[in-house]
Image (cartoon, rainbow, N blue to C red; front, side):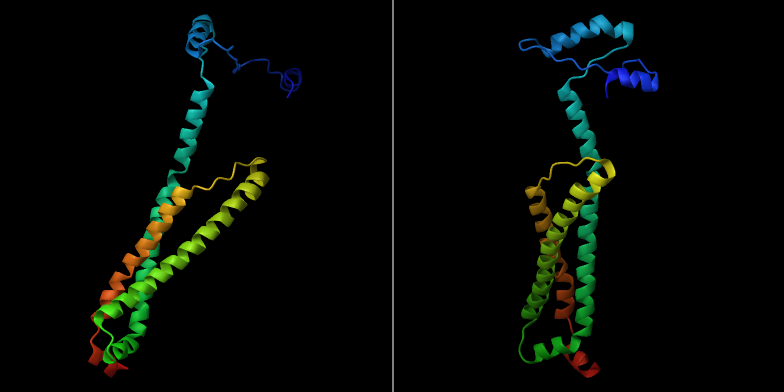
Length: 197
């Protein structure tokens, strides 16, 4: 907004920020010291460099996203519990099937590997779907919601390392989660399982 128009509209002719560009060859620290000597005590003025503003803004911005790492940890814990719960329920429903597999010669190790493989497939499938949905949601947030809510948007950036680490953590957590139901399946009493059915 033009300054004269702003003063007419709001009746405010005070200044609280002045942007100063330093010539090539002039040290920013020297310019800052001279400005603060000239105006600091008289106007309670202080100087902040563009780099300092950018650093502080990015620090605050990063702090706001710390919660996403906490949410990621919670999501992995919930995923592990969900896989354990699902596979345990499936094992309880499939006790006769697992007992029959043991009767026809499937070893305890093979049953255990089968359950861990199932949890691995669940983990891999959920990781692929999670990455795809994450991309879709971030695109909607950046290019639709931000524009409608704030009138501006941010640059779309793929944090490949974070996605790789989160995907690996999710996958290996799901494999580890399969060990609990796998041990339960390996301890089934074959005679009891067949008789109860």
